[in-house]
Image 1 (cartoon, helix red, strand yellow):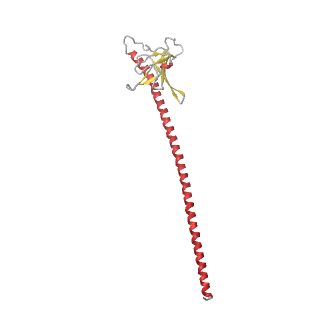
Image 2 (spheres, one colour; image 1 turned 90 degrees about the vertical axis):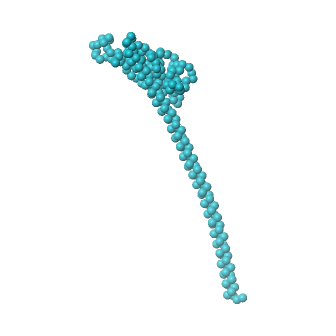
Image 3 (tube, one colour; image 1 turned 180 degrees about the vertical axis):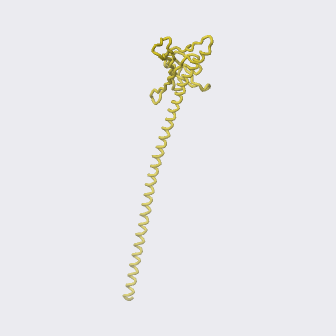
Length: 210
């Protein structure tokens, strides 16, 4: 074998070594990239789950608050209607008095008081000093609110009526007999909301005018 052939074989072996070395380095690099890619995918999944969880919890909190506010709004609407109903019942008593030919006094059954109670179909007021008897219970069969004098009551609402005689002074020189008197009616509804007593008050003036 001559020197020239020997040099060719050595170069060939060196080339094979370099080729195998590059192959091994390339395979190691590919594995590292796969592991790195898998690691980033796991982190991204954890972050995504965390973001979704925070958004879900926030949505639940908003829905819970909305449901609570809807309940409070419903109670306030009912209280407003009950207060207006108290005024209408007193007005109906006055109007009924006008229709009685034997007793045309419009103030019959409407004496001044701080603690009157009336139901939706009352023909006169009931003076009741015990506030525990002011509870309005909802009748499932009738669909009306009515006083219930025993507990437990199925609503949180209480209502009482305040009647006060007032005098309208049109002219300073008029005598007391000449001055126009009218009836101030206050319908007051109370209920509990978040541990606090809430109140709605409706005021109206009734006159001896047909």
